[in-house]
Length: 125
Image (cartoon, rainbow, N blue to C red; front, side):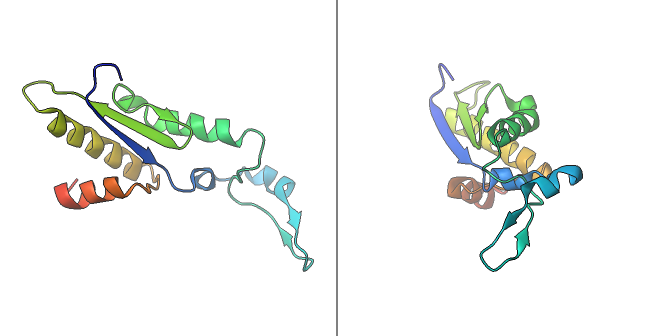
C-alpha cells in the first residue's frame, strides 16, 4: 500500500453466512427456541470458534490473483492504487475496483459498499 495515492475499503455483506456448513456438522449447530422449535444453521454462524479464520481464508483465496492491489482482512477488502503506465491514479483505481467487483461477482460474494455499486452503475463494470 506504500506509495499508493487512492484507497477504497469494501465491506462484504453477511460474510459468514456465505459459507455453507458441512452436512455432517449441521446438527452440531442446533439451538432450541423459547417456543420449543429446533433451529439448525445451514450456513456458518458468526459465533463458531473458527468462523472468522475460515471466512478470512476464503476471502484471501478468492482475492489471491488481485492481492497486489486488493489485500483483505476478514470481511473487508482494501483497494489501493497509484498512477501507472500513463494512466492517472483515478483511472487505475477504477480499473482495480472493476477487477475486484468482477471477481466478487464471479465467486458470488455480496458487496455492501455503496461506492462499489455506484462505480458499477456509473462506469458499467
